[in-house]
Image (cartoon, rainbow over all chains, first blue to last red; front, side, top):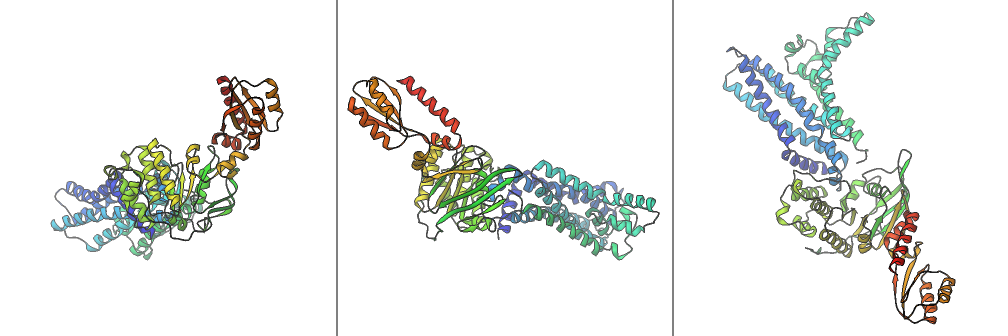
Length: 266
Length: 334
């Protein structure tokens, strides 16, 4: 199982590099920063929903960009420098490299999140905040899934182009596209309506907005009302569907990366 | 330090360690490797020569599956390079060109990672002893290594798990003379152990020192394959015969020498006559002819250097220039 062996190799590498340590620290500190900011802004009227919203805002701002940038140079950097050639002097295949690297970077981000979220939840418990367990559960379930999406996007960028600079640029472009997609979807729907004279339902426009990982995550954590001013009201916008959208976003970039990378020259 | 491998190969090797048939790699309209028919026998040390851009590294990339051929086929250790490149790499030790080490990992971690990926249980310190990396350096970050040490480390990674075939692309690059000698010893030792060694280099002397046969690549094509001695004989480069005489021969003798088939006088002085011999038998004829007029006290045979042979196959114009330059130097001396 050379994919496991390559995973072990990349995990060792990740633990040693500044990038790896920075990713771990940033992802781990993001939930704590969210809780801290809610304290500062609460004016002594701290509510569980406000703490969760604040934590979500920080986490959803920090984790995707850190995850995507922390993964974007993982393979392209080794390929550009020649380190990949050195390691491929073994029975390792390019798909082993792809999936082994993805698994290592995913574990790094997930472990950082686990530490950060555990401490954040412990703080909420200590503060005896009356938590809505469903909302908290959604947050704890979907945040790692969202992080996995951005690791997958970063790894895909890393295999699609041959240099670090290009893969980082591609990853940033991808990140921005997923971030603004809900707004872009709304604008496109307005343009379509004005040109065609057909009125689209608000739910449909909303659903199209959730087809990006950021939109799906925002919808799935159960506080869509706080973000979109609209709560989920149809099966199309329920957490299960959003979970499926996020899972597709984990698999799709990896699938495309696999097609691109396994047949590429080293 | 040089430590021998303690055991001989026990696996049954195919008769050809490497075999390619019309192997071609094109980039657009450029043929990096064209119709390569190459056979490397099991257990031999094969030198792979060629100027920059000749296609040596592309050939190696094709053999180990780093790049896919445009057409043609190849087998390495009996395994198809198109279908099963990763499998064949488990029995091949590769020192690629254009590689880099992981600056954050120690030398030991590099070799351990490679051992894990190859699925072996070889002793790591044995490899370090073999390539000459001191104990103190083994646990230092590779980012602190010199170029020569990185080369030793990469060579060690190629040697881990006792491969049946070693493919070394410019293995002496960046090494000091001691390192070059170490590589030479390793190659010879591995060859004695039954390992096939495919040795690509620009250092002709290194190739000459360790290789049983050589192949010369030029502009993507294999222009010659043979032993170095056979290539010398086949290449249009003359052997030079330097004969020491008791007295200067007359012009008549020089004319007689010139009339002999395959003999070209180069210089004549009081005590020495130098001729170029186009074929081996011409040497005896030259000595006999000269000895009839003046006693030949001694003689030396100067074979064309590997550089001359190399030039003859890759750049005939430069070979002519080099011979002319040598002759001018010789005449200047006389």
